[in-house]
Amino acid sequence: MNEKITRLAQVYSIQLLFSDEVVIDYQLIYEYMKQIFGYVDIISIDKIAIFALNDHLVTYRGGEQASFQLMLTDIELLNAYDIDESALIQCWNIENPKELLNQCHYKITIADFMSSRMPRVKRCQLLSQFLDIMLHLYPECMALYFPHSQKLINAEDYQNSQWDDKKLHFLDGGLNIRLYNIENSYAMIVDTTGLGSIGLPDLQMRFYKLDVDEVVAYMYRLAASLFLNGDCFNDGDFVEGHYIYENWQVFHMKSLLPPSRLVLDIYAQNYSPVKRNDYVH
Image (cartoon, rainbow, N blue to C red):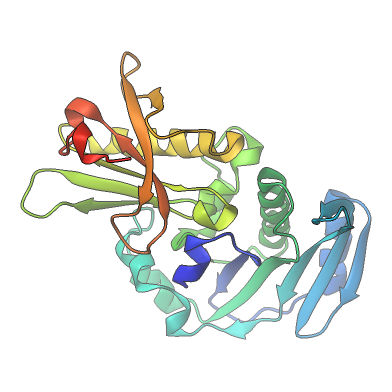
């Protein structure tokens, strides 16, 4: 699991969770896919269905091109080990995630295939559009689990996107924000999971004397900017701080919390429990 988070995911998967078994209508899914994606081929329909989006091409090294591919598994039993325990501990958007999972007994997994070289925003947009098709056709879906970001989210919450920009819809599930207390101090650490799987550094910040809800909102804004624009930062560069009159510095470093991965650490200056000299580069 951690390997999926710490490096670019060659196959990006999302799980749809159900209380009862549903019958997958591949032909109906195919018809909806053509409306959204244009020219679509069915490569196979078996225990795993594979669709080729011929109007959306992936360019590989050497210049070769191939159609972006999406996969869909048959309905399967949901096992306890399918959901990472940390996803339940850091699940702030569901009042009782364990109770929700106890009601879910089946899963359908969707994923892309041989598509990791598609530009990041386009790749994620195609995945989220496919997920929206599945949620439209299968309203029985109770929740979604994004293994790469370790995020569990109600299906309805995912559909009611928090983002105005449709390009960011993927982040409703593909981005998770975690909060931890730092032992023996009044400080906290906030970080993200999920960005590493799409080729970006995750975010991390140690802070105190700041409102937690405002810090989380700040991290969402910075993550959205990173998602759209890429990692264009050099160590020591400044970004707009939580307050508009402040600029905070950023540094690339190994994450302080597992899973081990590259993060962009935000030095919050007067609101940081560490000193600038602690960043040695």
